[in-house]
Length: 145
Image (tube, rainbow, N blue to C red):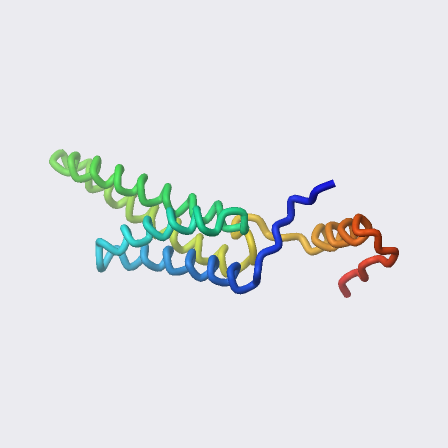
């Protein structure tokens, strides 16, 4: 029986987490330096490819979706600014980007691994115990105290 657990070197997982953090910070700095949001998009596409299966896939996808949605809605808002409705759309886009970036940073720092799903220690212990049993070892993995 093959396990779907991918063993990731800690340094690569740390790099993925820091890359996501930098990308969200670039989104926030996009209000001061507008082209920095494009840097975040590039990080999203590169990270999605290079760090696939490491628990940050949702983060990289969310970075990419946030950019394209905010760009599209900003264009609509700029066009509709002629009839004053666009200003409300642009305000909504600003709130949307700030919310996504701050919630992404909070969830990234609150959890390790997949930032949108908290890892459960008991499940990790159960998986370790299964792997030990599958390898033919007779001893159990001690439970976390």
